[in-house]
Amino acid sequence: MEKQISITKIKIRHSQILLFLNCPKKPETLQGELRFQNAWLNFCHPVAFYPVGKSLVCPINTDKLENYDGDWKLTIQDSNDTYTPVFTSRIRLSLLLGRHFVRNEETLFFPMGGASHSFLLRCRRWQKQDHLTFRIKELTAFGIAKLFGRSLKEKHMWLVYEKFCITAQENGFYFFEYCMKNKKDNVFFILDKKSPQWDYMQQYRKNIIPALSFRHILYLLCADLLISPDGRHHAYAWKPMPNPVTRTLNKQKLYFLQHGVLALKNVDSLFSVDSSSSVDYFTASSEFEKNIIVNRMGYNPDKVPVTGLARWDGLHDTSDPEHPVILLMPTWRSWLEGQNDEIFRQSDYYQHYTALLNSQELQNYLKEHELKLLFYIHPKLQEFIGTFHSEDSQIELYSFDSVPLNQLIMHCSMMITDYSSACWDAYYQGKPILFYQFDLDQYNKTNGSYIDMETELWGDRCTEQEDLVHLIKDYAENGFQEKQKYAEMRKEYFAYIDHNNCQRTYEYIKSQGY
Image 1 (cartoon, rainbow, N blue to C red):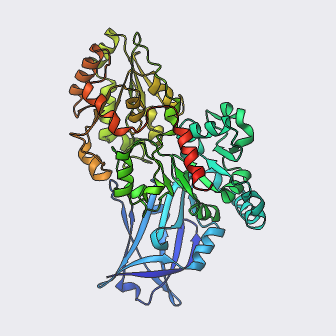
Image 2: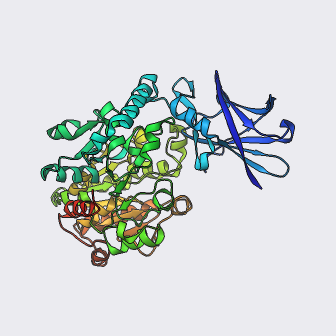
Image 3: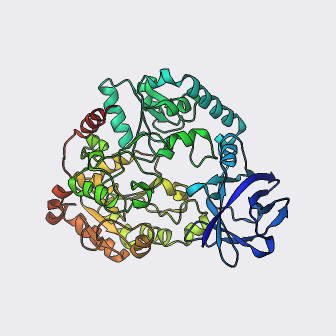
């Protein structure tokens, strides 16, 4: 039987985190373990207990834990029951207002609340917003918002942002630019000053908010609506220590612009109406997709407008038949995010793509036919771009912030992916798609999809490098023409193919009273 134990106090002592538990059991009857929450990394450590007054103390020695980004969960058992440690309301307040952490050089460990206020120990790298000065800025902005936020709220602000607030090139950017060109002055864009798009966005400087600035925090607390292709947590510091700003952010209304059409990746656990990252409005591109959002994810049909994606307004085919370009863009793997180079190099993901980039057969064909292959790695795996290499002059590697992705998609003649929703942009333009799915079984276990990958894809599919290279040759020799059977599927997946997606999105938001 599963029960709860209250955590009544937390102390930091050098590299140890001491949890004081309200537990009547004797320490010798209990067994505890700290387990890393990653299906592919089986790290687990036993924990001990000793009595102090009426409490049991559970010391967690962070020096003994592996320094991988992620969360550790504590479970406690005796002969009859399993216990989940949970924070009392007083401890939750202490975590929000204080700073409880252990720093081992550039690695940070800190306690935070999980589901139902259960204890989690988060590990990640030290960030600039972990300094005390930033916590003071947070609390000051939070206090001002509570005392004087009414006047700011009268502006009825919409805040737009993209992944980690470091890009302005996705659905958020296109919607924001539409608003600026149509004089919608209550719309603001959050952007890091280090973003490659920062200089371009200065033409709208009055409506650009520097990420993690005092103004950013204050406006975030007082906005009417968040608008983004990403979840709420991307609107602020990524994986922060507990703080009152993030707590308020979790309650803000969010219009979800999406990344791409739902089909290749099951996101029920992330964005379903009952999930921790649920949204208030969920844009769709067709009735096909709306049915997934309503029937599979539980949203009210009235909250799922069929508008099309904002960034499609900016799509124009710029491919050159005389100089064809093939875009290779695999998506990320949840089991590889935040891992070190050694683990990444051992993965099927690395082994397959590095073998493809260095295929002599492929290199010879590219050179002979003057074809370019552009390899673009997903932003969540950008730290590993340096592990890939190719000596061939016909193959170019791009990190996600070096060139706007939509430019590459517009310029390419064909796209190769595995499960990336970015392929919808190429499909929208009538370009052929190849699906290279060598790890489908593992992907289905970890992510899953809304379609049958073997029968319902809108492009040719393969699982072997040899077959992929042959398909590349076939399409190249046919002038990169899309097959008719895939062209006919387009009307099911897109309700509109025009340049009015932003307008439909804006009109829907206004119809909701914002």
